[in-house]
Length: 315
Image (cartoon, rainbow, N blue to C red; front, top):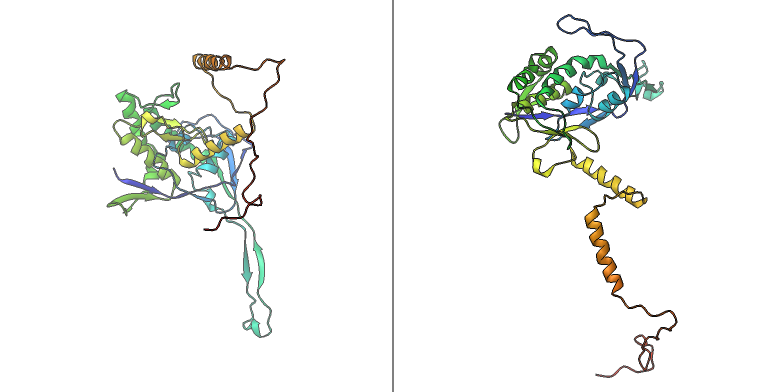
């Protein structure tokens, strides 16, 4: 199994809104599906560079994504990116200089004019994600639904596992794998590299299915994104160190405002209360009608060093 190198872009400024009219989808077999109101996503700028974690399983985020939900699609584009690559076709605002047609403007001619270059937004409709999302849904069948602990374990059904591995026969998955390139790995010999998000998602799903058995997965408590569990005994809750830091910072802010919650254990709290009561009953308190005895003091009050008239002793 070769190493996968990916460097993509997410779009923190992406804004999603529902399309005004329903759109029909025709799969590869030619059977039209019922029309749906997909989501239109618009953004400007160059986005932000995004490098996944070694345990990243964001391909399951796209498999579970509701392509008709504007909030969910907007969060996916802001956190992970655009699988179709359409948002990268936008152009940020900038300034350009238009030179005067006369040569020698420095000797008295007109100087160049600086004008604002208008921004061209990148636009994508989530119907363009449907083919890839359908292929990844087939790959996700190799895992069972999350249990009470939130962990999704791989299935033991061999027929179901074989069907999940056939997701690479889907047209969207085959087209994405065609963009995978081999390159020299600095830490090894050869590695697969890509800058396309759809290629990365398909390759990560294939790598997870290639393992025997496939690794269990769970969702992050902060970003709600899927990630692989490499050490099940530790029961990880966060997909990255940044999400762990955000969670701890939120806990500090919650406790500082005095609204923190604490789970109580009946037996532990009763035992602690009984020990406190025994310690409290063992104390001897002064009666209310008696006055407290003043504290003992020395015959001469202590003075700070150098406060008296004593001269330093000569040595």
